[in-house]
Length: 143
Image (cartoon, rainbow, N blue to C red; front, side):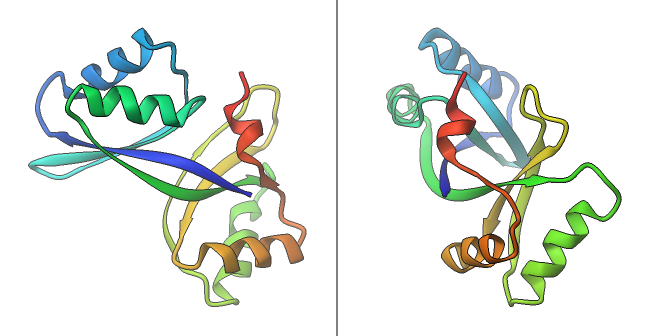
């Protein structure tokens, strides 16, 4: 139930993000979701792509520093309190959210949240027990 996310470390200068997207595009790799966080000197681009192994390889070949992280994709009801219900459930069970980002999958009326937890396996177990829908990586990677 985990999803492989790649993280790309970027110098905070004009054109570096475009170099990543160009490399992915020219190698026919589709970005499914992304998040970009930056500081004065560098940024961390987090990506869910349709072919993470190929993406890691072509980006490393272009000189980028690339890491791999397991995250969890969760479907959140589009109603007031949908996210709060998930966060309360996790917090009440001692799970910390390290970071998260959201997107909407084509054909869905609900949001998809990508979570990085401090205790991923325990978080998956808690979400499952509480009938909170976890989206498998194969569904995220499908085109």
